[in-house]
Length: 87
Image (cartoon, rainbow, N blue to C red):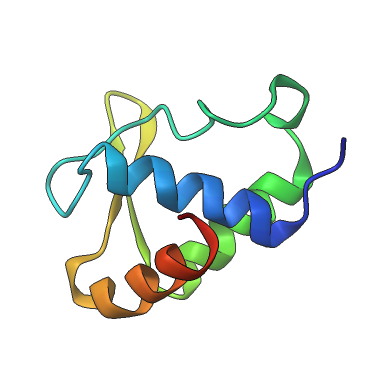
């Protein structure tokens, strides 16, 4: 089963919203919740890059790994997306 970019984006946003990863609260386990075969795929990296470029996600290097959290300043935008695709 191949997931579209929108479906991957929805899974990432849904996970971070459910785990309450806002601002200073972050996680490196961004790939959990995605099918195993997609963990290192280019399409997932593209979606993460797009989310960072749109400033929906904040990325920081912590303990040698990239950690991600939701940007509080873009809450309205990605919650609208969340309501459309994740519920």
